Image (tube, rainbow, N blue to C red; front, side):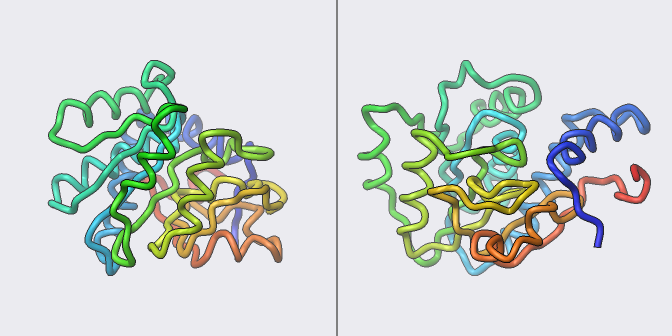
Length: 218
């Protein structure tokens, strides 16, 4: 099976843009909608999205919007100041902000209390949209706090593209690493998923397409 390392994953969108003229915004929309299709059929009745600032977060904002359309209750938690969002992620956050979506803004002062007050149960899905394939090394605050909280909850944990804390290339697990029951990965499994230790973090891996066959870009 074809896998993608970190650099190949970074290059994929640009190749799609250059070769087919498909914008990054459309690719992000395709990814988020495909993930929502999978989430919708899970045995959950609410969703909490933990979002950082990059394209992984952008996928999360698209997912949150489609969950709203499908009337699935969702809370989006932004772990960074909104002014740090750029590009397609910012565009999708701005769209989500104009809708009647529930968005919480984490700060050093309120984040711990915010997490304690969330009503997470066995029928709640917690989505990791924090760092994506670009994440390397040990997750820092507030990401480590979010990961530890999620791992301690009796919820259905879903990583979008790759669990935060899992190295895309080596499969090495940082402390902490988001321990997913499912990973919805874009285009192809990531190289690090083949590591013997990775399975404990990825759970079941489901490949979702973003509208361009992988074979067209190899």
